[in-house]
Length: 472
Image (cartoon, rainbow, N blue to C red; front, side):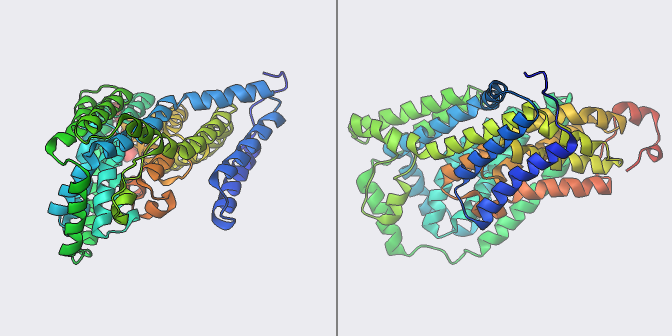
């Protein structure tokens, strides 16, 4: 580090952050420019701002590397999800699920049933990414055959997957939020249930109501028969084709590393493709990179069965790498920390501190592209403020989770948003309005705080101070 380097002033940090947000906002919404190009410009802006502070190129390069290192596991999963989807196509796993899905699922109940399915799967496995990459892909295929809008299906899938991930005791972000806030895991989950529980019921009711609007979407018998006959003619359909999905689910529930579970599921699917479907080895291996290679002659099915592969995730991966590198700069050189500290000093009310926490980590996601970094930084910066205002740390952990974990899905350049968009084939800005849980939950949490609902006091204060002494 250069001897002239220093922490940015509040004005400098604000100007840097405003420049980055402006580049993305103007480029994305007004000029309709490639997000990759915009992130490259933002990376240059961040590096230039660090140079002004007196840091060397070596310092900046190291900060970028550190930013990427924080999400190495996510990068591996990016690649493996593409492999899993392609393998599931070649093995007939996806075809079997679509076959039975369009046969037995009523369009009226598709959205609420899909929400519950994704919630339970994510709750059991602790991963929204794994849920979206498996059950989500299947539900997108079935729903599209029923004629439901793809953004609506994607929003439902993400709402359910993020609910389970957020509430699961085996989720990495759930544990990270509790650890960063220095509270117990189950106190954190209990605190979240006060805000997330009511919101989940609201989302379930809305998706049920929306599903009723598609009661007339029963497919014509002729079209239904065509789809089913085509699937039967191109695949050997049986319950054994669901074995790769079962392998992934069992390993995930047993808390085996996500990468290991995905490799095992993909390997099982490859064996089924070779032994059961009779696909030659070169076709299967090529599909793991280029995506599913099944051509049925039915356009609707071909679009569903020509997906996945490592190559399909490369655009998403490159975007995430640039966003993570930018986040490393903003984190290492204190730009976001200075902004948040400056805002926290101005917060007086307890409810305002909750709102500030949620909004700050959301902006952390905007800047750093990754919920992990936002959660850790938030835990470091807000802890003393919660103690000083006699608010239980479980309220802070809940606020970090609601502001960081949930909102990554709503931002195109975060690892979560980019992953969901690439996996489901729907742009973030298209599905975001329908990812109901992800934006309603933070808003409800803020409203509850100002109403004094679930704004728990520290245990010591509960025992020794009357409620009238605590400002709301």
